[in-house]
Length: 371
Image (cartoon, rainbow, N blue to C red; front, side, top):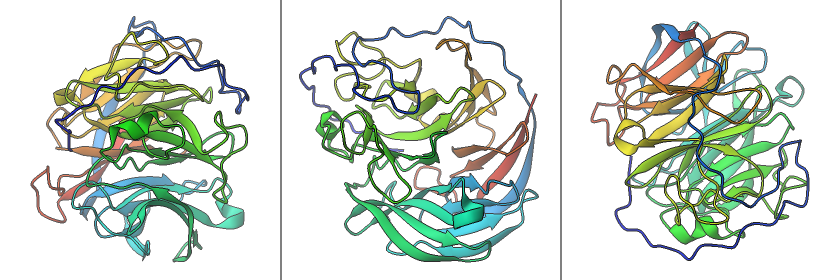
């Protein structure tokens, strides 16, 4: 996990005007800075009660996405560009690779995966990966056995050694959401016309989703290196983001809002910037994937080597007291994914990357039971 030691302070932007379109019930007026809310008024969530190793022999597993029926999960490996199907019991089989992929010598490569909610009808699977011309979002066909039919849907997302974002998730509105890093050019996060430093929202065919707040792919802006997104039972979008030197963030994402980077890292009082709901020091977090189970956000962390549980409230935007689990027990934690139909998570390590120092094949996937 990389943290750029240089930082440019940009002039604060004017407060955003109210978003012009309502987007799947998620749009609220952009504008005033929101104070952090850590009052602990969210309902208590069930604690992890068991963790079991279900699969070994991995090398930097990055993304996990389940088929809608819960029969199989697809898992990507960042540097090998391989895609595997994994049964609930942990048996794995390679189903293909993602063409046109390459690494960046750092955090780029084959990253996020999202199975289409209508997979039973169209057999589509979506990937975010690094290629020669930058980061791409691509679609392939998966028939249950093999991946075929590569099609690049969105190109022109700038890449760099670090800060590539990479997470994909379908929202309750049926559109595909993607996180992009600033690609080590901090000013891009404040440029509405740049695809970098953003959360993007698009159709299954790769077009900008209708109703996006700026009339392009951009859903929210001002992000440094977002790597976790998940929707709660109310359809709200939560996001985890790597800060620079001081504060990592958990944000509640609303369309058209500006989450501050690089003007703000963590909480600030700059007009037009939206504050996170929770922050951590970088040594105890450096977040990657998130998932939501039983009324709480579960956040996997890299440098922090722990799984954070943050209770959220269905009736308001308060978050509760964060609890850490498995501190230092399993190393760097990358992906955390809800298991369909169960109060369970899959949790994967990436100790075989350049920061973990472990050899290829040393990474694992665990099953965590909640409550």
